[in-house]
Image 1 (tube, helix red, strand yellow):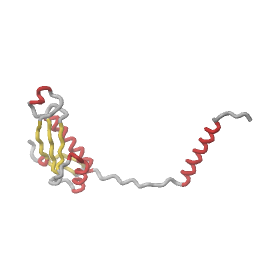
Image 2 (image 1 turned 90 degrees about the horizontal axis):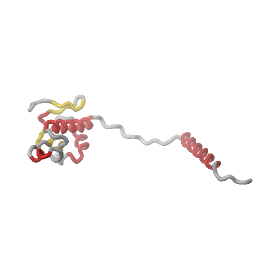
Image 3 (image 1 turned 45 degrees about the vertical axis):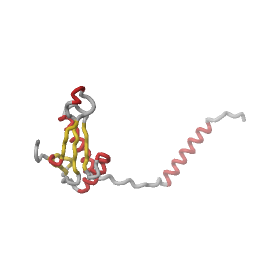
Image 4 (image 1 turned 90 degrees about the vertical axis):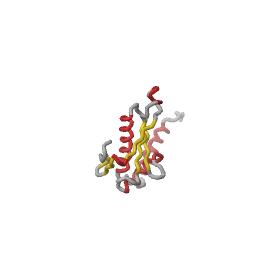
Length: 144
């Protein structure tokens, strides 16, 4: 195992590979008879409270993880898309990096509600009245 390597999440935000706990489990899905013999699925665990992430990123990471986070703040990601441990391991790590990357982004400004201007309301009502006149003129022909 590569001890001490870091994984870059975002500018100025990294985690150490030592903070990841990976275990291999048997996978359902493709693999034929091999699926019953070889543990190819990966269960990746990342303990957010003990990580070196900034506080704001920690809080948002647990929020974004949703049901993938335990009560203790451990994010659990299971990857079993592929038939090999290496690909599943890379997939689990990529999904963790994606989740932490979203958490590292600053939150978007909340939308402020605005009212339409008086002029825009008048223009809209005038356009509606115009359409109404056009449709009324298409009505039944009367003998006058």
